[in-house]
Image (tube, rainbow, N blue to C red; front, top):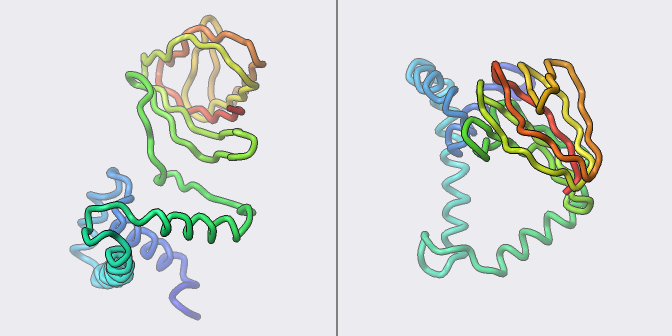
Length: 191
């Protein structure tokens, strides 16, 4: 049995890679640094990831116009896109709870993109509402489905709670969207 077959090793390896890449969620980073100080196996994994990425950094530096701060040559982006396109559509993708970027779209309102179908424009995302946050009234240009995962979401007089499903049709105008206790909502809609 190899190390890769051991779930705890896989999790440590994933955390080490995210730490080196700078994508480890800030909530996990402090605990990771403590564990890094105490665990020689984890330090070794971090060193291995630093070595792997150093090779990529050197190769990338060789492709830019003489400066590490300049953008990669246009031809490099073309080759990267061609190779990705040649792979065809992905059969599956996973977004871990701690990965992805939350983007603020209003005071106390954030969203994180989970999936975007470039052909149809369909998106899946998470919407996070802080207690008392208000997302202004808006009109929908396409069907939008919402599933309340945690907490609550209030649309005008309509109160939705964990497990509730809500769908609106194109041309529907939502009143202000708010949350009394905070909420996490899965949303799916077309562009």
